[in-house]
Image 1 (cartoon, rainbow, N blue to C red):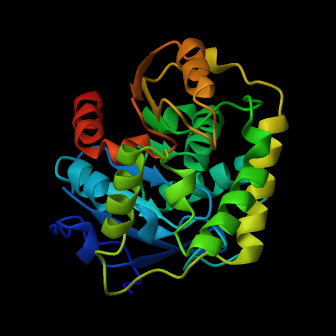
Image 2 (tube, rainbow, N blue to C red):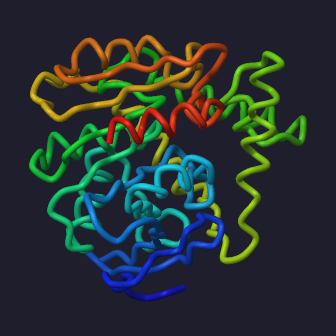
Length: 287
C-alpha cells in the first residue's frame, strides 16, 4: 500500500481493478483509500454501503465516472483496512468522512453515497454545507424514513438465506428475484471479482453490527429539514427496493428543493448497478 496521496502532477491509474490502495492518517485513523481519474477538477467522493469495503464498488460505475472526474473512495473508520472502531451513528461516520476529505486538502467535493453512504452524504451536507457542491444519493432514505429501522432484520434474514444457498447475500438484498434481476445480480457479483491483487480486508462482525446500529438509529430519528439542502441532488433507486423501501426515494425527491429523480424498472436496492450504463451517463450529465 502507498502511504501518501498521489502527487498532483501525476496521472492516476485508469482502471479500478488496478488502482493501488493508499493510506492517509487523519483524526487518529489511518484511512485506506483509492483514487483514480483526472488530477484536476472537483473530486467525487464515494461513500460506501452497509458492510462494504473498497472492493464492493461496481467497477463499471467507478471506471465510468472516473473517465471524466477525479474519484476517491475510502474505508470508513474501523472497516476494511482502515483503523479504529466503527461508529454507531451516521453523524459520526459523516464527521470521519469530513476529516478524511479535509486531510486530502479539498475545500469542495461532490458526493456519491449509496445506501448507508447516502445517509452519510445527507449528514455531511448538513454538517458542512460549504464543503459539498453536488450530491448523488442512491438506494437510500432520509432520517426517520419508512422501513429503514427494519434493515437489520432484512440483512440477517438474507445473509442466512445466502449461507443456506451458498449465494452472496447481495443477490437477494440488492436485486429482484425476476429473471432480469437474478441475471443482473450474477453479473454484478462477477464484476466485483475482477480485481485479483491488493484486495481489501472484509468487514468484521463487530463493525457490521455497529453499522446496523447506526442505520437503525437513523431510521428512528426525527425527520430533518431537507429544505436547507440547496445543492443539486441526483436521487436514484430501483422501483422495488426491499432494504430501503423505494417510497423513501420519492420522499427525498419531494423534500429536496433542487433534486432530479431516477427510478429504474424491475430493479431493487442495487438499481444503479443493474442499470450501470444509464446511471453512469446520468451521473456524468449531472456532474
